[in-house]
Image (cartoon, rainbow, N blue to C red; front, side, top):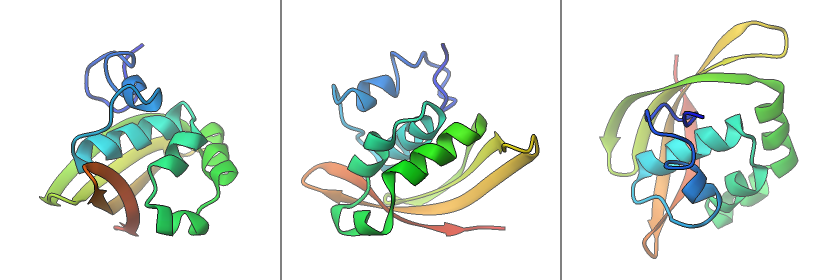
Length: 125
């Protein structure tokens, strides 16, 4: 199975290593890709674990996992990386109504003790 993050690698060679905690992402982009895959799989535990601890209270693991399950994730496009800790992306998916959707976001990440975390996202047009 190809990795949902659109790296061109197999899932076992790519995001699964992060999901199974065998490796940690070494860049904000790599974390972003692994989080996209965690929605596609879905893996709510990974999504919570990779959210900045101080921000976790604003997120619901079951909600994130449910959003992953109710949609069919079709493509991830990295639009830009304006800085080391920001990634602009488009996540393409088909919703539960069968409608094609695009989630366009500029995500902010923070590195703490050599580990990247998702902080927040700004929706783009």
